[in-house]
Image (cartoon, rainbow, N blue to C red):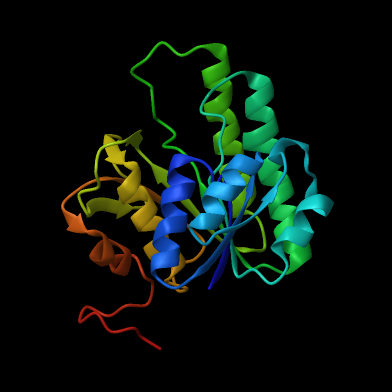
Length: 226
């Protein structure tokens, strides 16, 4: 499988690239600097240098030629409204349009829990961030693509534990970035997991079992139904 990752120089995007390569996939992505490009090419990742915020669908589409899946793992992390607008809204919109132009059917978006940070006194910029993330979840879910939206809970840098809770709704807790990358890998390698919004957080179910459990048309014995 050929996967293009937007946000490949970020923590989750980089971990996802490593795991996909380990599973035999060809990985490419967009980076902002030549230093990032050199570092990733050593790992076997083909990259192009460019600023996602400055590239429209016409500029992105040629990068996706021959790709099987696009993963949008970039994000502004609740910064200034201008950055949120550029990355979390406009860039997602452009990536969707670029995938359609390039004939890429599978599109995965890394989003956020809608209720994340609700225990805090949020700034206007942070409130705007969550509103935009929800709007783009809606935009992706209304597209004609073979889409998938993954909403991780609070991301942590601790080692992955290999077990999670994965489903259409979950209690917002926290999860390691390593476990999120592993879940994304398993989801991308399961073509029957499609057109779903999934929330993932720490849990007790092994990741492969958690992903298998949400495959549609599965009998109680675990066999796929026709």
